[in-house]
Length: 384
Image (tube, rainbow, N blue to C red; front, side, top):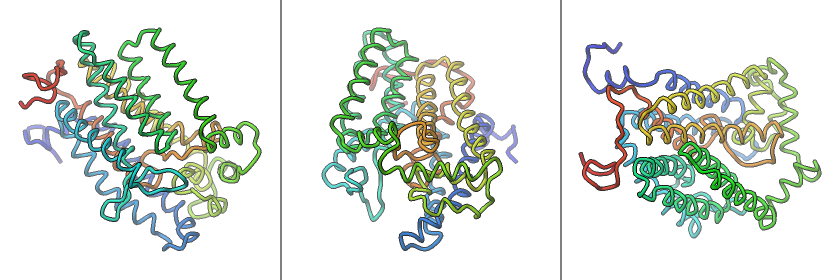
């Protein structure tokens, strides 16, 4: 037990960190392991791997993810900015490399292999992008003659261009939606809202016209015709589960669901543990988002307010997209359920994101603005 009189860094962290956030994140991670046991063995056997291949890998990924989340949570807001800057630079370089030397899967280049491990750079881009844009918005709010909003728009254009080039339109939509929420919080003029809304609509029409797989998914969603096997099977799994589920290991529909351990793990949760567990999962995500927004609105530091808002909105949007696809409320899209779906890059990147939330929401004796122009004395990236 950590004593209140202990002045060490661990004791200080324990008494200042938001333990409700910490409990919610760890609960989601534990659910990820439990549901991996339920969802992945059938997939592993179907592709010729050992029964618990994905379970073992999920546990292996979980260890550095927890370590990264806890480690990042010890950082100050200034060091969070520094970490985000390094992550952003590395992610952008890696996303350019992906276009040339990346591993192609189903016509898309989103992964790069390093030392035998496949990494998806776009997953690490998202939290870094959110934090740097938050800092740019805060700089503009602090001193309007600093073109922080313009730089944030340029950074958005660069990120979206690299995502579309892969192509990964799901992540494109996620990044754009999160950025829009942050810009709105930062006081976006209504004219900008209209302009960006129009550009977003034009982009959606262009994606439908240019990318055949996008048009195919939207057409299947609207008409119900074509290959709808996976979404129909996911819906059948949810219906079979009822309120209390078939029981651990008793699900049958999951055995023929191709992506049951990733995109459709929510359907597996419904089949084996029932709608009640689904409500618990949704409740945990909603709790994190609402508590994060509440913390952000109480924060005096513009940078912290925008960053916390952006990071929890990112988590919320991603979970909404995944769950909506499972419930056939939107066209099929490969989007993991944060902390729960199988995937090393997604898990570790989301753990870093939520570690940033833990760091930024820690109780501190003073709440004062620390966002200064870069590399000036006392600035965000200048040495102490």
